Structures are given as structure tokens and as C-alpha cells.
Length: 156
Image (cartoon, rainbow, N blue to C red; front, side, top):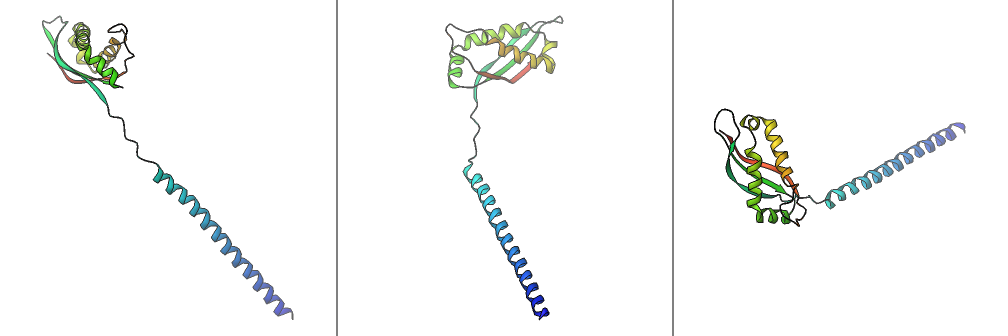
């Protein structure tokens, strides 16, 4: 009688192991399915964000006499200003003669040797941005100018 009891106990232990294995497999399946499903819906819900359309104010190219110890030196420069909003663009376009005059005054005080170097171009970009710290008119709206971009830059 001991042999049938032993085999019955082994059979119950084996059945219990199989049931635990099946239960844990089902639990892991549901856990992974629930986690994978939420990630899939997150991806579907996220829409691609389009970058904002840049707004530029183009300043027509012009020529400036540069300071030089070696005779006449010229700078031919064309540039654009990247602005944040349409209001800044409209304001700058309405006051373009004064903007160009300020640029001419700034650039005519520079030397050719200074402007040829990359550091000189970086410095002049910062100085051009600084031109707009002083108001063009009173009252003046807050101007949002992000960057100065050169389209032409020839030193002769």
C-alpha cells in the first residue's frame, strides 16, 4: 500500500508543479501584453510636432567702405535677420532705412583685417544684434530678433 500512496503523492506534486507553471505563464503573458499595449497606444497618441516656420527679414546687399591703412577696402554684405514673430518683421520692414543706416555706420567703423577672421564675423553678428537694444522709435514694441545670417560677405 505504500507504493500506491507514494505514486499518488508524486502524481499530485507533479500536477501541482504543472498547474503553477501554467498559472505563472498566464500571469507573465497578461503582464507583458498589458505593458506592450500601453506603449503601442502611447506611440499612436503622439503626433509628430512640426517645427515652427522661420520668419526672416531680408536686408538687401550693400557696399561699405572699411577702415584700412593700405588704401581703399570695401565690404559687400547681404544679410537676413531671423525674428520670432510677424510683428517684429513688420516693424523692421517699416523702419528699414534706419536699420540700414545703423548697419552702415557700424560696419564702416570696422577694418578689413578684423572682418576676414571667423572671430570677427562672430563678433560683428553680436554687435548687429546689439544695434536693436537702442529703440528705433518711441514708443517701440519689444523686438524679438534671434540671429543674424549672412548671405553675402565679400571683403576687397
